[in-house]
Length: 310
Ligand SMILES: Nc1nc2c(ncn2[C@@H]2O[C@H](COP(=O)(O)OP(=O)(O)OP(=O)(O)O)[C@@H](O)[C@H]2O)c(=O)[nH]1
Image (tube, rainbow, N blue to C red):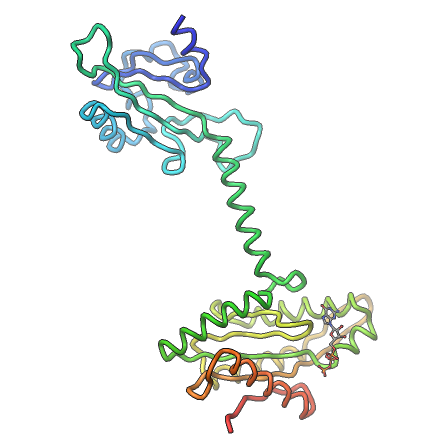
């Protein structure tokens, strides 16, 4: 009767002796290729299952016998010990069953009161593993979309400001160089009025792609407002920032955006500011970049102005 119950379990059960020879395995374990043949009983565990991590598992099994206490292996650390295909109708990142394993010391009734066997239980954790992976991916995607501007797919204002704040504190603390480029599309209202809002959107999207391609990995490019963008340049002084701003302005000026039968051209007005002792705080730096940008607009647009103190 007992063996019938163990046979029908939806958990794998293996019984081995203290020389690691297989004594018994239940029906669940028969889906393992090594146990498909009838002559597995009596064979050494590690010969039967070459996928087992011998050193690690021997240590575990020794401790089960020596300490008379169970040992475990969770799928989070080792996805499986026994390489068995899972039978779930779901797509996971592995064709193999995720397993939680428990190794229990056994004193057989006919023995001398010492531990003479170890029972290894194999629980199928594929479902949990699958849903955890899915949750992890969903959370990562949520985090990404929380910091991304929906139209241009670059950093949104909140995330950009967060990064700017951190970079600013680091520049103050470690006396690092830090620059900021703020820019705004010129007469963008006319683009919308002349070609429609969708055309305007396309200009914003393609402009973001063009500019992103000109930046370094550590630069943080964000959409600051409607047609206003900001680039944070860590470890960059005013000369480097100005040169990059000019490169961007010129590339932008030469860019032609195709929308239906229209060829749309646009220009940028840019303000550049670099961190130096006179800058009191984060807002101060932004205000100065904004003043430089305004100066570019006032002096005819399609210009780069670097903020000069005084
Ligand atoms: N298509 C589109 N237009 C936007 C978006 N966000 C802001 N705008 C438009 O950008 C225009 C900004 O206009 P203004 O602030 O007057 O500035 P401007 O026309 O660029 O003129 P200057 O900045 O003075 O050169 C407005 O028409 C907004 O509707 C957007 O996501 N998509």
